[in-house]
Length: 427
Image (cartoon, rainbow, N blue to C red; front, side, top):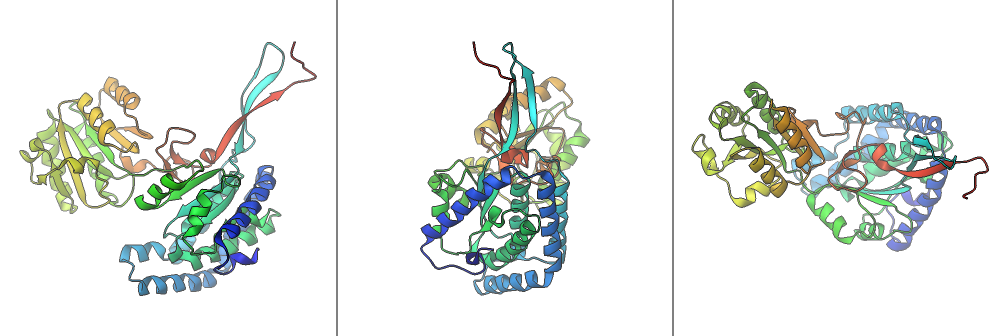
């Protein structure tokens, strides 16, 4: 493995990053034609290396945890940073899961004969080099590397400085796995510098990097959006809604609303605003509000909501808010049109759900709500790669071009036209 990945580097950051870029570009060309069997062998070897080096990984992780405590990081940040036995087991299981997924690369679809006699189709191909910038969780190092590798892409990983030792230790396991399968070690490279200039340099390396994926808080994503000269796959906020229609099954509505908010508070697919049709509001809120209170959720409601249940008045800002906390904004609406107007006006195009038994309204909601995941009679918490059958995800995209929604293997590929002839010439 390249020596600069073993320890933190203190060299001119731009030239260091260019070196990573050059090696990644060369590796991406070799990887593009790698057979699925070789990529799967590499993933299995990485899993084996992680299993064999648990003691070293734990020792490196302890260094990061000790530093985090000295820096007075909060308990949630320290928890995200920890690589305990169960998390290592999950990383190993995830690598095997990704190896078991079908390889999208090389698949040809829509192959048709044209009147000229040629056959024209579309082939799935890797994007090339992916730069992934993320915070806290060392497991992202393994997940992102595995998804990139399986989809035939070289990956440059820039994790948070708080996880440097853990990330570099995992990357060493990945390098050994790649070498065992005869694939270029530069297929996965971690930035071995805590220099903040590394991110800025990566965002401007368009000659080497084809796409950037930021995974982290709003500040990180905003910085990437502001500075990147490279296309990004990203989402900024998860302001998710559930709309309970007056033609909803009330038992379904209660179950879905409570799950969408309380199953986990801190995820991007958690409901942040509940919209309820005025005709069913009294019945729905009489059951939902006490359950929310028992789960520790504080309500912020519109005037009509506060006439029916306890809470504090919602401000205009509340409708835009991604709380990631036990707080829920509630609004009573006149019907589906006002609900969709609210979602398209205040939402973040992440995930929105309708609860209704009216098939016509369900279809309208699916067509007219402009979000990357739109659901009928299901909790917003299903919006992730694992639940969608993608195996894993590199992130969620609320953009409209290229990938939208949870981004799995297919989202890390593109298509090109392929033409088959047999001496054909254009007349």
